Image 1 (tube, rainbow, N blue to C red):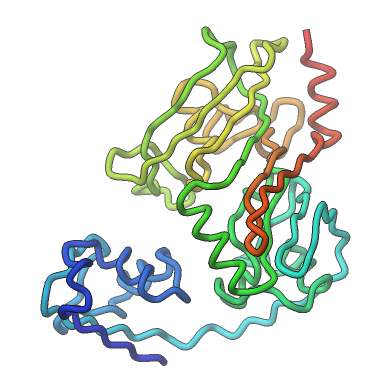
Image 2: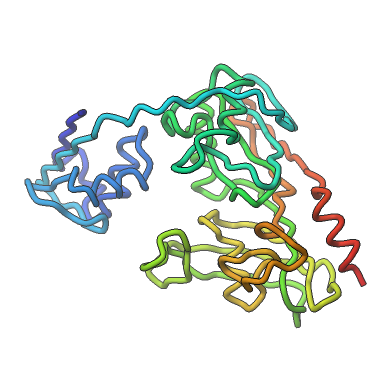
Length: 306
């Protein structure tokens, strides 16, 4: 177990009043904010020898003690799973992930993930997110297809993580949703948080983190469906799915936030990450990648197009 002590003295004067989870995730770059919150929930972080909550505001003179438990040893096995690599250099890889593939190992999904495939393909991946998520800077849901950025080294990972944090990334998704629209373009600016009783779901919550989705209607389809394009300004978990459901346009196939019926025998939402653009972490040159709609999506459109 690692033990860390931070004393809030004059060196940290500019951070006084900040939430402790944000302060520690910024100060301890190796640990994500979610991991810090987990440590707080498990009373592994004490302030002045007392447990606190993640929203505790740090004060001058606070003594923060952090006990980081030994990591659970889990063997993540490299597997020879075909990858659709759109771009690769010494710093980054851009992968076109198929629908149905989990991005990284988690309880119930330790094999056949994108990480298993990446570890077989590439011997060097960034280590910032630990043994379970090597190279992974951002995620897309299992049943969302499309483009994903992976970093090969920690320097590139830190640079790209900051770009995601400051929303300096182009991310455009294509989706089919229920119901026709009264307008062609719109913006959804609603905060998102973890659901209070169902921890696998996200929900609109005024106390949540700001989330902004810009949408554009590409076509009105048969059966009162619409083909839309969503441009992410922020990147919260399930953001497009939650936002579209909140305005009565849940995604087709999304049984979590939309109708429970298995229309067209779909497994999961019709959502595709079709455009990913960013400034390269080493050259700073802007590069952008595009991915064609998967075959199942094209077949659906052939059925639904008016």
